[in-house]
Image 1 (tube, rainbow, N blue to C red):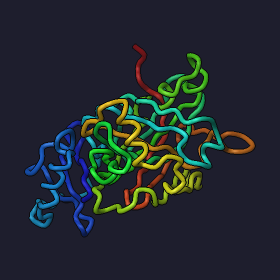
Image 2: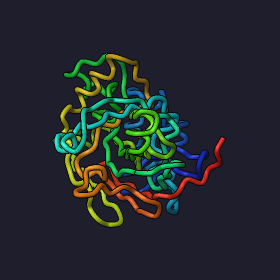
Image 3: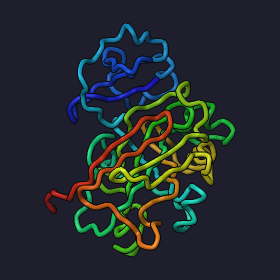
Image 4: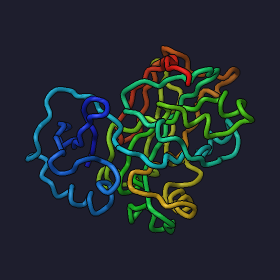
Length: 286
């Protein structure tokens, strides 16, 4: 299944993309794509629904974040072999939930930002203390990994991450708008092997990242097993799994960071594509 949330900001409805690529309304079957609705039993019930009997949604409505009410947004850094050569050592961090946004939107440069970053990620959500061998099979382990997969992006503000306040990953990766999710949440029947998916990202039409989940240092099952040792992962939590090489920080001879006006397009094989425009921060300081 491909599950989506569509409609105006704050008023999204649950939906399903059928076999013909048409959007169907799911609101009579489930109130929201969050929490218990994303648990294995609930998804199993949704698989029994005849998509052709669901109301057809006309037009091309806005798609919101495919998971609502994200609790924990856990970011695993430097988890691809070639990307690790571009930077340092992998340190997982939890991100703020306000970083989550709809997939086709904008990425906002934080106030006082000096540098930005382009990065494409594979993401997911999970359970508690999973053994590695069961992490994919049971699906409580990574809403992405075997039960439910989605496309996530994770821009990074390097000035915040490395310099301001002594350098700390959470500041660079947790800014508002830095975690667009979607366009859809994909169940296991759609993606048989999360460790064999092509990943790509372009900036203004030029390819910057071109990689595969096959080059992860730690695979999806390993990440689920390890993270769930330290915290309970509830339905609706998200794990992103690192990024392939080609990020702005690693460009030679001079790093190339995102600026206002840049257009980012990215995708993961089988999980759909995203497009965002980088805009300047226009919020008020409090």
